[in-house]
Length: 555
Image (cartoon, rainbow, N blue to C red; front, top):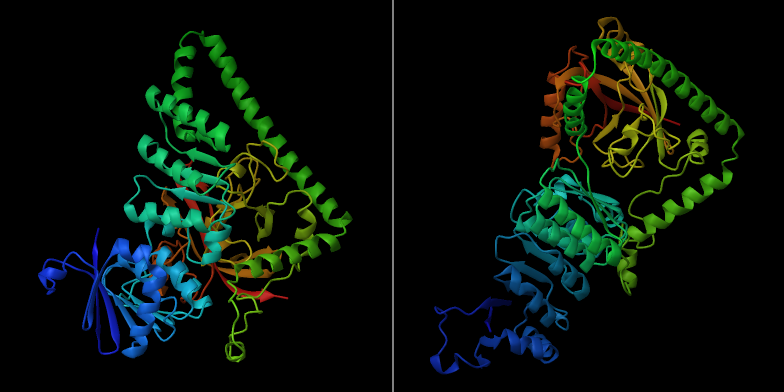
């Protein structure tokens, strides 16, 4: 049991935990007491008599003309907010502890309706959006908004990002802040399908699955990305999978890296190769060379055939109903993102910019009939990319992860060429600051990004016509101006999607610009939108990267 000290001074009411240093007479220590401008109640008494105490606080607020509430500790706030439901003249909440505002407190503030301003040390961006929709102003004492690693890695900046997110990545071990944010995510989200986890740590994996099931997250795929050879860990995962698949239809699986699989296959190949004679080895070499040549020829013909089929689909498809359906669905999602205000007053509705009937973001309409037609082939189609004087002229797809289209084509058929795809973290409708598109470097056949190596030749990148990349979506036709081309050893630093502020973004721009093999003299600022193309180079030891900025939208 804890004692809550309530004091009133200068039109402010303060709630704090009573400590041994509190100046309260000894005969009142173990009771719920009222003395002048100071009160003491136990937390149990408050929970059991919330309605009575809410009326009592209301009368005190009126008597002492209280309009501000101070709460000394973050964990005390949810209990205290329950006491303010009737105190309509209290408009300001100040939380003194230097901790990030919790989502639980955010929910309680929205229910209250009377609190118009909250002051806290820091807050996550999506909560600011949620409070703002409910006409609550948030003041922070820290200049930097707080984001846990979990929220940042999954680009969970806006409430709508959290609500509609279909896949997340979890990096173990989880900090306490990450774990709490995972709970808040599960409480808000309504579309989760896939969970990617970087390694298998049994206790943490158990806790994660328990959180998912506690919030009724069923019919999920949980993919652990780790090269595990420990039989005990594998058996533990099998046991978990057996339990959760049957009860919740949650499937847990291991995904080994290609390098790990290749190494293990290679070891076995060496053992077997030592058993065969030189004649068989020579024959295999000839077969392999022949197979590569035939495979490249077949790959080229397959892709040409697919593109011919896609062109016929575009020509023969009536897209009227398709476009109408997409527009209606986008309209519905936009309306779901709004947090409706209960019984808004006439005055509030008449305030400038305060019309709850209008969506927060403009609902985009489909304008690209060709792409709309391709949705009949694959509903993962989200754009089309063309790089001048290369073979790159393909529809672009996007999956729930960055693995599926490494070995599947646009027809969802298993294929080593894969397809051109956008990073799963990017928003295909409203472009992010950095929009990343991947493709295999099929050098010998020239399909996918197989001819992108030409961009590193001086004769190519100094030609102004080649410096413009075309990328269109269902909703917009766009041109991008190349400002950086380079090869770099394997790294993820250029694959950043979320930026904490303009300074962070400009530091990123400086990094990728200085790497360029040529100075394109293209000015960039904090408002720019970037398109990034990434493929393998130097037999997979490096990456060939192209960055371009959005320069105009075509009607």
